[in-house]
Length: 468
Ligand SMILES: *Cc1c(COP(=O)(O)O)cnc(C)c1O
Image (cartoon, rainbow, N blue to C red; front, side, top):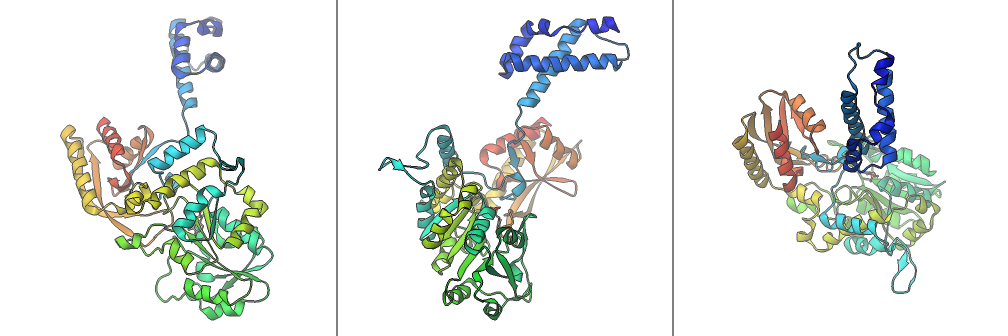
């Protein structure tokens, strides 16, 4: 055993080995770090010899050196690999929450990179040469796009809801219809956020029906707010009745000191209805109807970064901006840059918004997808006969808990590999390919929906399929 242990090369010998220098350069890791890994690997080999894992068949020094370098390299590669990885989303679900919701536009990405790499006027007024506020940056754009008097940006929509309730309704009562007390995305519940905020939830009506008189009866001197919540991923169908935003606005306007606040959830800035997609009103309509405050997400239908947008009456937004909690939920310069880079395209109008991946992907037509899918299939078949391919019609979903009732007609490429089961194929493409590919599996068919695959990703997808 002693002889065997002696055949393990010493750390200092390996440090001076040419392979060590090459590895250090290749991995861009310094001497100290690599030495640490070298020691770890050698220690492991020593222990394996002591425990006789080698069954007496111990290799010679030269072979050890080889093994050690392979192992060090493997460890270094693993350690230097990001855990947050790029993924190709071939599921067709546009706002896939597990896959990071919205992808940013080129313009937004460029603006983020510039803001991240440089100093910015984040809180500085260039005209006056004085301290400014980070709230000013995106506010003008939001005001222009929604018609709101004032706006502010926070970390996400959950934070926006919390700030609004905490700052404007703590210790007071907030009236919400029972039909709107749903759980969103498995972790967001209005009732829980309300409790955390210190506001008292007053539930009115029933799950399927709430009338104006239900609200009227609940109003008292403790009422701070009437809140409407978008039911997002949940739709009550059948014998239902709810009070429209317009009516609630008229009703709360007659009352002194009662705020009408609507949590829009996704909050569209683009009118998808004109393409026959969903029934989501645009934020501007709600603001123009006279709502006091609205909140919505930055990374749902808007197509920007994770953020919460609060828009509405200036005197209320001013109170929110001044609240201590605003500091807790504030966004950084990269979020503001991403949001500004996204919103700029909305200002450009119909042509501009097509630069925003979420909107572009939502608007892809079935004909367009059919053409792309057939061409993609023909390219596979040209090169390999490993796959049995069918082009079938199906549906894509918007996802992210938005427009749950909307089914977007799409075209799917159904693949059957001649050796691999669809589960096995899916696993290989998920774990062995870079970038990882996520698609759908249905009854032993591997289904690709090109709706959420950009043109440059198509090439990567093709290469991955041909490699197998
Ligand atoms: C999605 C959603 C939220 C939470 O928004 P995040 O941006 O994910 O924090 C809150 N309210 C409604 C109605 C939603 O749909």
